[in-house]
Length: 220
Image (cartoon, rainbow, N blue to C red):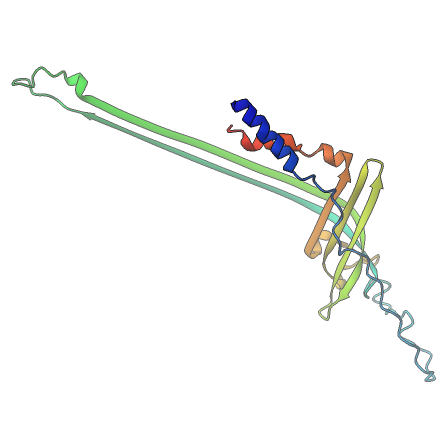
């Protein structure tokens, strides 16, 4: 009877468990287009025109305007570790010595002794290491008055066994860009990096729903 109930509960869980949706890249990382060119001004007799792609010699062709591409050098590396330990010990003894004469003289002194002892020792360790390297080209989405810029972008790869994507957004200081408009990801403020994918390889690395069910009800 108990086995029948367990099978019925398993069937109900199977029928009511929703099928996991196929992961998709989050929206909001589309490339930013440059601002539309301003209308040409009437000829004023001057040869110099600052709106015609002018860049100072000290600045070169580094990215500085909305829509300009910036190359992010991914050099992320983090290592964390944590350990904890606890140890307690406690003991106690008690004994009663009966009189050698009188009505209680028959008591055995060894039978009136009691002792207790308890101890506990626990240890825990946890560690994690992650690293990410590569290059990703993004575009400037917003230029701010304090010399910083909001950059964001993504790269998608359609492989034979699925799709992979990496998305990036953050705030860079335009002065940190080198001559090729590159900057280290470690110098990006409020950086958001997401590397994920879908396909058969990703599905194989995840735990199945039946295994999750038995892990939930297992008392061990």
